[in-house]
Image 1: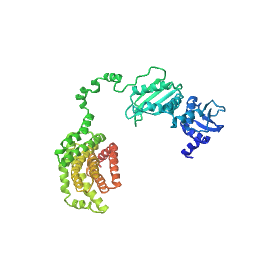
Image 2: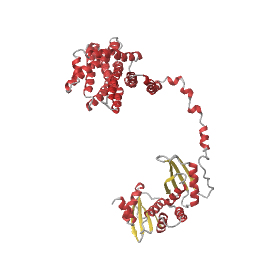
Image 3: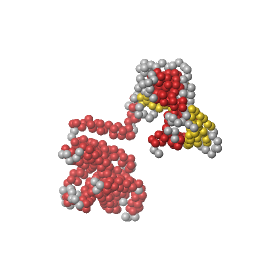
Image 4: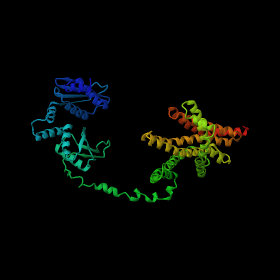
Length: 523
């Protein structure tokens, strides 16, 4: 039986339908209900593992049966029984005919005057009828554009939720409620709890509780003429120095923190670039933004690698050597056989020629270009002592390469956009990938090669072989990604590159021990 059919049958006085509705309403209280009808009297058995609260359930049943308005039911008897007990723990009854008659009169628009309707509502409200109380309070708050959205009675407590487009004024709302409730003289209500909140907000902005009684009414005055002096007095207790500690903000100690410096750099750098953007060309802006994003990855990689020996001079030297010397050498070698043939192969349609061209051509040349400053400035000078340091500087060289490459690609993307070959969405996406994501992978592949150069410093007797292995691993990963960059395979290659690099770092102590042992044994 569907919900509308159950409700329709319940209004006709069907005890099974009434039982079904009651069980749905009481399921959260873990109370089961069973109803029967005898001589216009509804018998309701309520069962629970704990003794049901009599006051709450009688009020609930009175309200529910009044709302139902079943004309065949004149009286309701309630029997509350604890599970596994043979006799009811309490029972109660009330006449329904009088309540239904008055409620129907209050709901039906007749020829009675407005005054008679209000008297009927007031009479029902004085008996604790929630619908009548709601109707009266809606009229009382109508001018203030405040709506009592939820009203309930629990034992001797009336709970009211007030909502408005703005947070309802607490003093004004409480005064109106106190005035109306004193006039209604609801004997069953002793305490009133009021909650005020803004529309579409879940948490009330304020709460007020008071007792109902014959007392002097709080005058209802406009909000503007009733300032909250207590709130203003509380605000005055705060000192300006505590809220805005200028001395601490401008102190030298604050700026000695590397974390603060990084926050200022990464937070303000793009805004500083925007100040010169109108007077700079595309290449300059792309180069500056490339340095910005690569610097972020540089901080991440420094924290990951924790190089034993760190020098700003060496970091800048490795990065700019790759940009100013390594890339020109790379561009020259691309025109020298056999690299000319290998670079031509990457533009063919077959996967095999592309794979060979990307690995032996693009991969070998670009990874050699990034590894060159590590070999010249660290390995040949004998400054390398561990693979983590060389991996870090290799990664910095890779970031420098990525910045320079990003500038070149930014021109291609701009031309593609101008010619209508790509839309704005793709232009934003491809630039984000080029400047944010790809620098990390250039750094990781160069870091892997740099890692093996560091191992070669520990095991010089096998130096050539170790460097060859590192260059091969980097070139293969680089070339495979370029070949499958437009498919899910390329995504997997990038993920594998990160995991392989981190694995090398985690096993560095073990591998260093093996290399030292091999060197001692003459291998």
